[in-house]
Length: 217
Ligand code: E4P
Image 1 (cartoon, protein in one colour):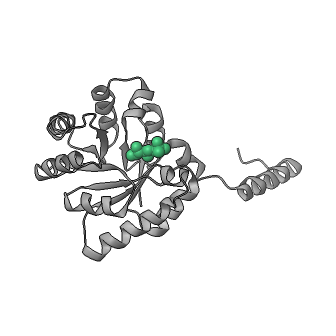
Image 2 (image 1 turned 135 degrees about the horizontal axis):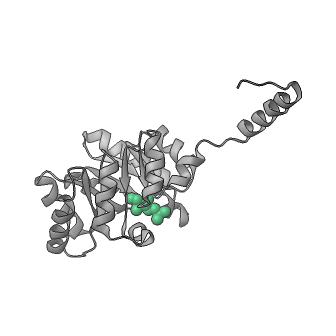
Image 3 (image 1 turned 90 degrees about the vertical axis):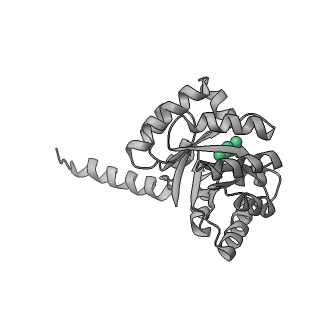
């Protein structure tokens, strides 16, 4: 499973990238607003760091303006994936951009039917939002499973990009189901390293290091 990092914070991207943990980046208007940066400028900077797909989201609601925005975003770098919402206008924009050879990430997906439409419209990535479904008591991981089954049934090339990931457990569950990509905030990726027994075991080893005066350097 590929790891995308869900942030527009340059330092966080650089830190994870140095460890080989970043196969791509996703942003959205809320993350751009949080960064306090200009969308074109910060997206260009991210593309200079990361070779893999960098999702940059359109902000218009009608297809014509979305397409113009998408074309402008796509000019930033070769690894831009234009992110469009899963609306009818978003699907029209997805089809037009993918026909032009631009990668498209269709976002705000909350149902298997929406994912089916995105695949038919030529999406490179579909972004089902796990956490926001869990927030309303619907099993987000079940949606990932359903989309996996449907895409495999018909051989769709669209990659499942599990999004709205809120905890480390979501990451391993997505990997078990067979999501192609998971995008998560830097804190969730780092939290995957944590285990209470690792902490306990290390504390025991350190106590013995102290007791025996073990030194290496
Ligand atoms: C990524 O593409 C999504 O925009 C993001 O994962 C949404 O996460 P949230 O539901 O925690 O805001």
